[in-house]
Image 1 (cartoon, rainbow, N blue to C red):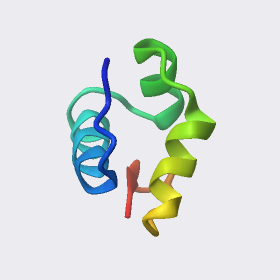
Image 2 (cartoon, rainbow, N blue to C red):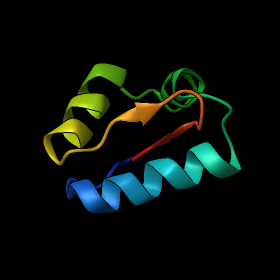
Image 3 (tube, rainbow, N blue to C red):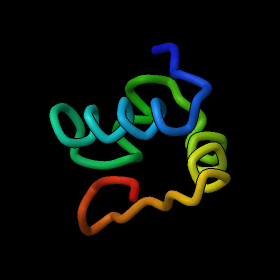
Image 4 (cartoon, rainbow, N blue to C red):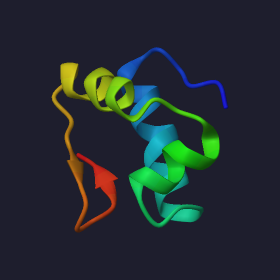
Length: 58
């Protein structure tokens, strides 16, 4: 999967996948071959953090 560079577009894409297709961030990253640490860093720069309990970034 090619992810957008813009953090707000990235947030939208990732949260949509987490809501509709994957039960966890680990599952999303493993199946889609995404570097989890880089994804978290990209979104944290814009002020977003992952909530395991809610399975989304906010």
